[in-house]
Image (cartoon, rainbow, N blue to C red; front, side, top):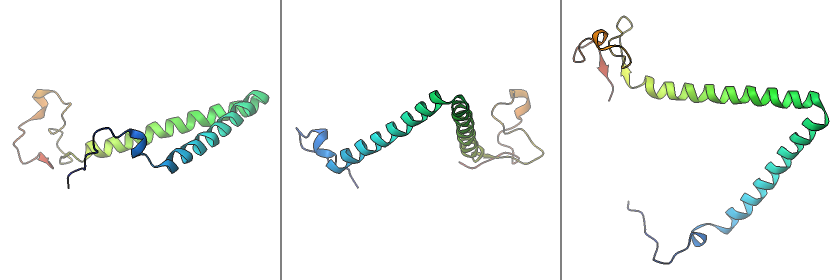
Length: 109
């Protein structure tokens, strides 16, 4: 189905629901209050500051790990190789790749 085009002279403000701007302002206010509270608690008590930094690092590492798993799943579904053959790996040197047309390397594209 083709995307309808707006007539000439349509501003982006006309294309955004007014309620969306209100909700964005509320989310912005809540997030500023939460971050301000974390900063205030971190400055007032060093133990709380250490906890905030620790959990920030832990959640950042978990996020990077989750992105790595998602990317690995996407890249891992590209080629199906038998367990005794490493000929299908793209990163292997050319002399170790073998014949790409061999039945040992099945592409799922």
